[in-house]
Length: 229
Image 1 (cartoon, rainbow, N blue to C red):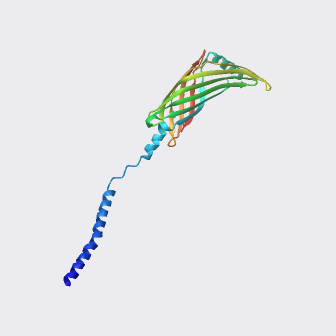
Image 2: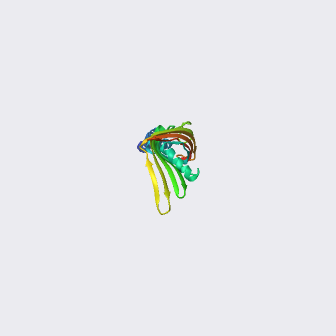
Image 3: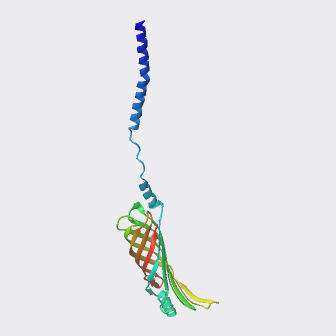
């Protein structure tokens, strides 16, 4: 009897120890699974740089004033304008660029639309010269990051002129307008970008251009400020 009881107790203890070993084995397997390296998480900044490169364009908007030298029909219109207003006139330049940042490097490449206007008015007389240019634009930032620090730029494309001289009596307007054929225009300059946000910079630029269409030319020196975003 004593031997039987001892055998039963031994059997119970042996059966009771089986789940413990099984649990230990399961824990060992779990530990081995959790020891495996977790997959690398994507770089959020890298993703942002990717999307801010080719996929999403940068926009530049610049406005300023010009000092112009004209020839041909442009020079004739400017002479009439200065004669009308005694040298007082309004000059305005506006440029809009749609740009890409290839490889998230120092280059911004894209298209530029620029409109420049000289206007004179001394009632009832008025005169104006309007320039339009559509060009390929390239800008290089010397620090290696687009939108920060000193940069150089160059544009080349198509240009046209439109000149108007007339009289406005309040009741009627009589004017003579001439439009040039499509010619060419180039511009080169430098500036500085003050970065104020991840995708936003304030721009200050000084540019020199030359445009020729038909028998007329214009050589503007442009000082402007703008924003890149």
